[in-house]
Image (cartoon, rainbow, N blue to C red):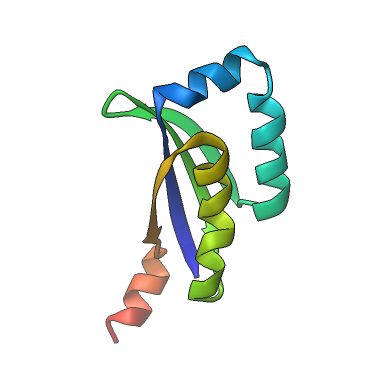
Amino acid sequence: MTMLLRVILPCNPFNSIVKKVTMGKNLEKIMEDIKPGATYYTRIDGERTVLKVVNINKPGDYAKYAEPFFSQFDAAYNLDVMLTHDGLKKSSN
């Protein structure tokens, strides 16, 4: 199932990680592990935010996508189902 993983990175400890120059390595490792289809970095409601399009096959896989952000950045996250136009048409039949 295609989902949008929205990760909200709090200023601390993220600022500390950026200053230690380990942020890039940490994010690169997470990217290798979860293999998102697309990744965007932005600011939403004044907060650093990462948007990742991921494919999750079973609910037990949710932790694989969220846990690295919890443990390394104290981040919050949301996972939302994404449908294409064709997928939406099929679901309404």
